[in-house]
Length: 175
Image (cartoon, rainbow, N blue to C red; front, side, top):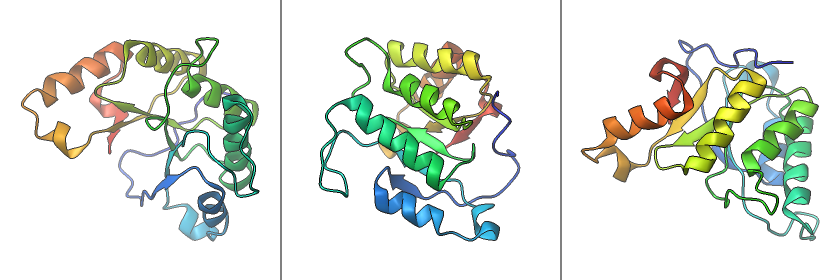
């Protein structure tokens, strides 16, 4: 399976920004099909924390596996943005969490849209480039916070991150 072009760039859609918790996934699963067609959530993967079941995952892998399981059970579509900005990006084995997530979701036949930030580290950019090539991802989210938007360097910062990944602005959804 390769990325199948999750979003038509000309479509209008509603993008709720959600934490990757049980309640948010449950809410997504309850949407009716006509509504689902117009919703493309941005899921912020949260750091290790207590689960709804009152347990804390033993490892980051357990936490990310639970995220992927919930995603596949409740929103099993490519039409979703995944943002890992709330997490540190290095694993003990030097594998980025974004790579881990995409590898696990790919096993479940899902390939959502990764989210970039203008100040991502070089190693995160390398991880995004890797999953772009591995899964044929053609669309990305580019998330810019208000302070960055007012920076006089914002245009060059955007161009720089896009160039590092080897994509054009036409391949990005500005978030």
